[in-house]
Length: 471
Image (tube, rainbow, N blue to C red):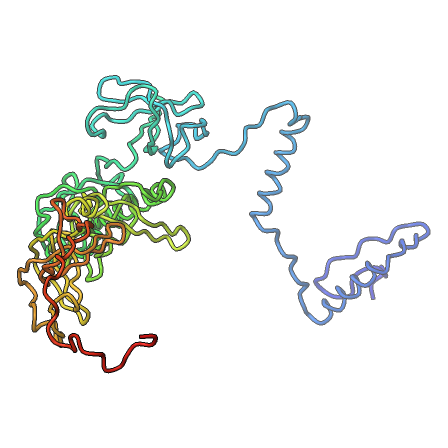
């Protein structure tokens, strides 16, 4: 046994440290949480289990914490009210100024109205209001450009940052096209170069495009070759620069222009007006005429004072005509036109041209059960009543006259306001005398001469068979 009681009794183990001299101090009391942790640690050690490793703090969180600490240190003592902070910038647009801010009128897109300032070189300068000016190419105007002070409608194309001016184009004018400005709704000038299946090929400033046959005109087009080599304005309906695909429509542009004209026309229409129009279609009952984007009906009875059998004999689609507005229905948006009202009315002089009792020649135009109509001149017809066709009873009108036959008739009565003339083909009675002016002679006939010889027959001097009372 070793002499030192504190010496290790196990071979190879280090010696224990000497025990402190003096009285031993009691350990500090542990909290309940520390006591539980110590017990758990002791149990894990006794059972050979390792203590769970503490999760490491993510590296990103460490960097965020470090940056946040540095920012707090750098911004200590910073007063944000002492500085002007600019508002957030908008997404940059090539059509806006370089700094991305809205400079008033320059950034407004779409249709505008402006006042002409003057012409400088090949550009027309326009005042858009708000100290903003724009320029329109002179070649977009047909004929002379408008005078200074005139108000015109324009469309904002883009804003030139280098010159600080707005580039405009005349409303409805075509743009000089390239793939950078071709987009839906842009108006271009297209030349029809070739007829293909389903439509025509067009050339738009050197770019090949396609126009469907249904989009060439407002009316149905059967053959696109009628439009070959024509330059027309059209609106872009599809543009794909990557695939080199361009589709345009002339009809859509025509409908757009017609809709604008339609509203202006309805606002100024009045009954009795004379309007210029274009015949759009012809039907058996009349024709439809377009006057400033508004279609109206021209009935067959209002075409001419002369009886019209076929409308195509008077007008046909595409003809330009002047018509008079007869009736307007604003609620149903219907119009009725007249064409004969602008021609000389032959009935105005009918009473002077056809005095009562005169004989004239005419042509039988129509047979009815009650008589026959006779044309005296274009637009003037009279009626021969069945009783004036023959001195004997007439069973069938066709037994006396035939359509197309020329007959000599006598004027019985003229009613110009009602547009009626009564005629007769019966001979004038011998006892009816007419004076030089064609009026009936009202002078009484001369008295008959006194009879000198007694009437033959009767009873003569003999007493009457039945004596008169009082004789």
